[in-house]
Image 1: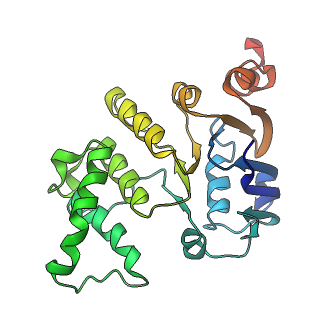
Image 2 (image 1 turned 45 degrees about the vertical axis):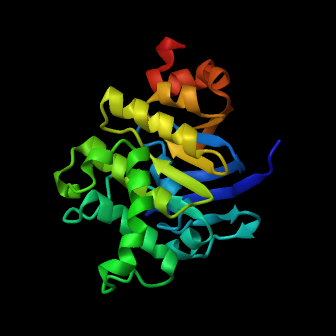
Length: 250
């Protein structure tokens, strides 16, 4: 069994007395696809924000590849290879799809995005940017402004820009939210392709996606871990059924 790449101990976040994440112990194995699921308000996205340092924990620790990253800032965590997507699509609306991905690829040049460089320098990224667009089903939309794309295609573009950073661990927050059935199938196939050499932690409401993709599932409710295991195990857990459907369905 692969070693853990990301671990939390007693991870807690309080907001003026409200405990959104409460003592979460999480262990994500390297090379796995691990899902965080739970009913609305369970603390899933707050947990993501803590892991990627967009929020600081009230208590607890976070370790990535054995290193304590609890006090680091988001950019430092990303440089270590822990990169996330967002529940709300985050793209440059007035850039083409190709240029959105190219900006992410330019990050490899160092601290500057080199906006002032000439086309001769920056066009060398176009081939790889087009490959990433092809991977997410956007090959025909390379020259379309991102703001003109449908919601599902914006989400696919965001995944492409995230992959451009070549992360060792990828955190996907609702990667199929708002997508058509065809878009969902395309993104699931993409995640299956990119898992080689990567670890993926995802928040996902579509349980059929979770069932088909994930090695391990952690169920959160009211900020606490309710259950953990494979899909067959957690889907039969009466506490999980009660959390999703109410105790009368158990």
